[in-house]
Image 1 (cartoon, rainbow, N blue to C red):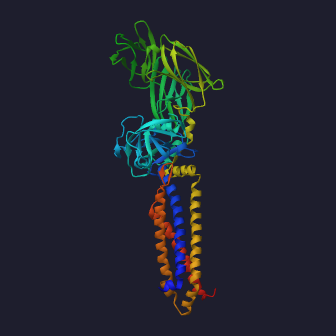
Image 2: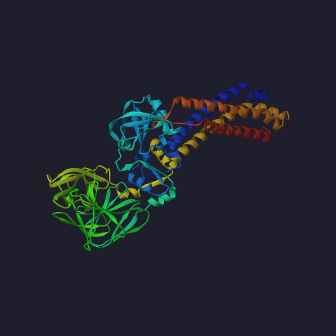
Image 3: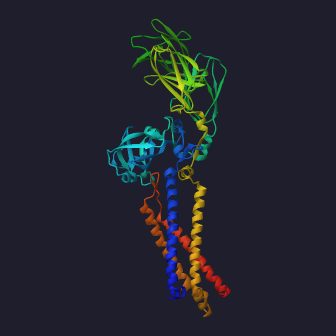
Length: 589
């Protein structure tokens, strides 16, 4: 009762209302900032301890381009697991939803609460529980989904609902190929790669520079084609002279294929993690030669020493076990010289009755292109020819048949279908479209291993236009302004009570008595107002159901209450300091 008389009832009521209003506004603003930033931090990768590989210089994970072959290569490292994915802001039923494209769905297998997880790729979509309820969907619904990066709508069937218990419940999941389409990404790229089993520093060292390869070989007729981890040709080297060949490649898993007329030999595969020398000289051991011939043909394979090697008919071809070297394959009416460098496939159809196909490569403006890679596949998708051309025109011997031609000059690609021998000359134009299958080697140099928090801060900067430092500065500025407002309120309370406090002091009241009867009740009242304002701010925040790109702006009550308590205690300390100062000075001012 003494405290009420000293502080005056009207002053206390005004103090309570002003403090409650100020704290509620400050807490609501804090909840908004914290909710948006923490939600995005978690949603962009802060859900796990995995390292993220994103494109260096990309504004966010949504605009990042990372070669898919890198994930395949990383999975070749011991105890390392790499999971490629796409992440795309999309629109479903007029509302924003983040769609995650995945090829591996282990995390979702046992989390389906409604519907089912499809076992194969298809036109399906899974929704997190929060997004499913927000969009008011039903299993079996056919929805139209679009994104800013894809002008066309994609129609998908709602196959299931999952619940992971984190912010991914606000997302949707589609097969990786659909994720690529929504993200507007070429087939050979993804948004990012999650990597576990290797530290960020070790991964950064692995990706920071290309590695040198020196290829030592004898002068032989043919060429060496280098395939990446997706079995796509990225380089071709002529072996006609014996001069060692040198090239630089980024970290990756590569396969080296020797190609000659009608022959393709798998020389070796290696995981490039350091500078290496590849020796194509004679190797010990036996290799398999597969000759594509009818069962009725009894071929004879003769070694350089004149020894005949017996073949076996297996499935649809003849198989020979041979060592590395030169051989003569004799048929009824013809014979072929074959150089074995490794496991090989020989198809005499590609060595006899061949037609000449002339391919001319141009840019869109009609100028001639050079230094590109050309690969030709049959209708079964098998590579029958691959080479690097330094001129705009290349003549290719091919037997009769239909083929798919790809011309790659990263990051551009052009495709054509051709029927040999009905067409002898074909022109292919390289457009400005990004290459969907070949990986430009320069892309690896721009990759950046990041922690989930680093990637998330970058995404947050792009999405709301604020850098992490600016968000921190904004929060600090909000706190300082709120503190000044509260200081003014407590200052006003002190001013109302100053005369009565002076009277107590003149009656020889000790400072401990004033502390117990006046300042302690104000402390209790301040903490009560802090709790009440926190509850009001939390209820307001939850009722608004705020979201950013479909993610709920989640916040925790305990963080709001801690922030509110900090403001209240700091302001109360200023009130206590005023009283102590006045007592010390004898209430002279």
